[in-house]
Length: 74
Image (cartoon, rainbow, N blue to C red; front, side, top):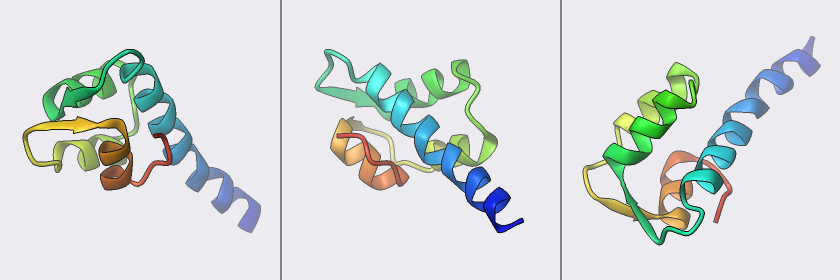
């Protein structure tokens, strides 16, 4: 059963990293609102949407967004 727990913990980071890689392709900075909008369109889990919604308004570079959201993209 511990294997199931690690499997469910992993998709959050993977989904977040995939989203950030996708939306930052060719972009230097993206606003919190745009990140959130794209996360909703990508149907990310509620836990990730809550993390993105909690970001302060403003623009973020990919490494800043990944660091604040707990991802590894950058």
